[in-house]
Length: 471
Image (cartoon, rainbow, N blue to C red; front, top):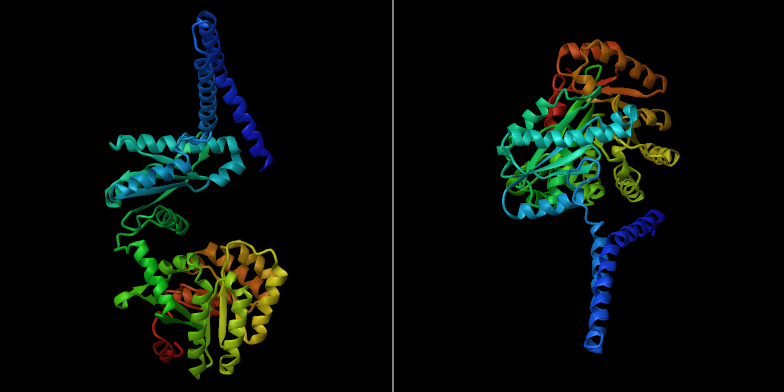
């Protein structure tokens, strides 16, 4: 047991003792007075039994007081429900029928805590929780359970389907878009989901967190029940039911690489998109199996392709670092000598891996095998910038944000600096989302080596991509 736990237990006992002591003394005085007045007429057995009952009663009162400190309903900072109580409440409500949960987030809470102090951060949490309550009351929604989930996140539970509350949620975000507490700017966003996605609370909350991380609201599109979807995804991976699509990447307007995208084939040949199935694959522990399966399929394709084209495969860094995946790749590569120098792995990682020398050793082992390595999301992920100096790689890919805004001078200046840095390190550069001639011209002027986008070629089957040749 940790020392804070010991102190907490000790403090609870002292509080229970202070609260129970008046009851204890009152009971002793009353019992003593009764014995003094009727001592000669009360049977000894009655006195004995009364003492036992009295002792049990006192123990039970102390126990209830002691345990009562554990059963908090509200969070001490926000006075919203605690996470534990919110979970119990939502699980009960979900059993009664359609239920909607909104995840409302204070996006800049970390910045508020660091700039204005934690006390002001707590004030922001308290005020936002009460703003939510007042706003919903104004809309005629009474007694809404609001729970403090973690950090700047609140869960709001509402009876009924999400269509009933979608507009209310969006209006709430618009109303509080420029909310200020004294001189503190507060940035608020929200996502929404209901039990049509899943009746399992854990899956529902995880889905909300995924939507929050992607910074987008749920679109008005047909959704598959989550339990159903998980079964379809797992079945597709286990039975290798997938389809590979390709998009050309050009250098000097000639096709030099093709990037792979994957769709899983569900029941009845319905396609499940990568954005939908990847979180499920990760949760199910199938990531290494899935990525090995894709690598094996691409390896066969590039062995059959006579053109000197590099096939670009996104691989998760955690899989790349695994010895088992390395062994699988080595074995598959040994039987496909024609694929040497025709495969590239792209890596993107939000959290910095601190055993960087070991990581670099593994990357060099892949490169010696004949596999190129590229770092993705340069210019947005700070880890990519750190890896740029720590890892020996062949290429970096700028975040798609820069391709979308390439016509803006600010983005051009940043691109130019990042491009120069990569070139000084002897690393080639690659930009996506080039959608027109002007964007391609600017990228060429900056000196970016490779370009990709719908202007240069849309995602399609491999034969169609290779037929297009140079532009």
